[in-house]
Picture (cartoon, one colour):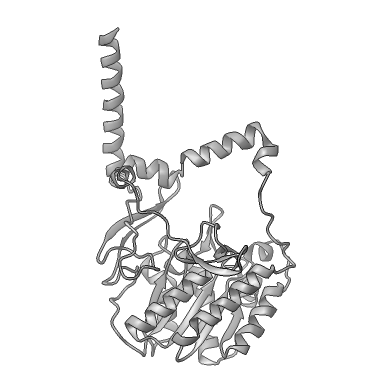
Length: 346
């Protein structure tokens, strides 16, 4: 019995070791080592850190990435330069699944040939985090001009508990801004960071205990899985929380924007593909709010619609990933450059 148990353990260990060796050879995503290296409110990567990024179980969109001197995915190091324009957002701005020359900062720099572009993305962040990046960029890099690329959920995701917050968040109960900084990774997570197998199952396949438990509950007790969920506002509405988050954003960036501030909202591409078009109230609200604060706001719906009418080609990386593909980035950055330069759109 004891001998059989030893053989079983040895067999499992050998299988795991073989699996690890195979995963080490394949382009599995490696640890980003994200942390608070340059500011307590900002998540970045270690300076000069190299890692691999790929998508899903079949390892699509493989990219070999390197952080610059300040821990951002960028084609250049950042130094103090008031002539530079900051491009701020989340993973839409980082676009780690695209080749370097296809990413937003590179395409915007090509359109704005006279201005260097400093991409300061924070994957998994939201609007109040963007305000912190503006503060930091002004204080540390002497930047005056800012372009903020918004996803359609960036306002509501700035509410505490959304899971899309790096630092400040809006507490709906108190009406105040709180700080939500997660705990440092434990020793087990730090060990798993260096395991290709763990990265594959937890990162590529996203097989976490919490997710597996939710799937079990959803399949066995559908009524329990849906209980307690907060319903998102209907597409034709804008919540009070979103409006307050937007007001707080402008209040917090006011001391740090000494030049221009342009907010750009991603288009409703899902509706576009289905032949539906509508102006969301948040577009009208943000347009007026930006104007009241001496800033600009634009939505990309028209730019995407005009191009889609001609080409009929999707702007998404794929049905598995709604990030912008190279064409989508090109359409977006061309529209942003035209707005920045004061040129009429197509």
